Image (cartoon, each protein chain N blue to C red):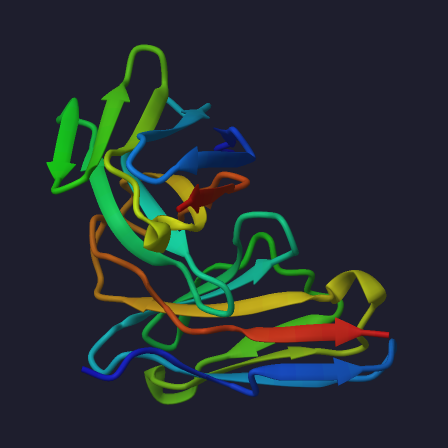
Length: 114
Length: 114
C-alpha cells in the first residue's frame, strides 16, 4: 500500500515570497490533515479536511495560510506572504473516518524562510 | 483546549536497559492516547495506542499505561536496541463526531548507546 506522498521535500524562499505544498493521501482515506512542526516541537494541527470540507481550521493563520482539497483527494497548502517564523516541517497525514483510526503521516516538506 | 506535557525532553540509555517517557494531559474528556516514533527526515509513525477504558497495553517490547484519574500516561520500552533511537511523541484526543484532532506533546529524543 502506497503511503502519503508530499512534494517538494525541501523548499527555501525569501520572506514575503509565496510557497505551495502538495499532498496525496492514502487511497480511500477521507480525512486529511496538515500539521506544522517547528524544530524541537510536536506537530501542531493547521487544518483538517473530511472529504473536501473543512472540519477544523482553528489554528490556521488565515491571513497568510490557505488550503484546499479539491475533489476530496489531493490537497495543497499555501503560504503567502511567508514570514521567518514559518520555517518548519509541514506534515500531511490521512486516515479513515472515525475516532480511533490511525493517522498516517507523509515525510513532510522542510521549509526554510530566509 | 487540550494541553499535553511530555517528559523528559531527552533520554539517553544503554542498550538493553529500559526507557520510560511520561505525559500528562489537561482535558478530562480525552479518551484516546497514541504514541508516535519519528526518525530523522521522516514523518511520525504510530507505534502503540491506548483507549481510556484500558489501563495498560503491551506489544512486544513496548507497553503503555494510562491513569485517567491523574491524567497521565507513560510509554515503556524494554530491552532497548540502537534502532529504538528516535524522537517519541505522545498525543491525546477527544472522541468527537466532527473531528479527530490530536494534540501532541513536545517530544522526547531517545538515544540508545550500544
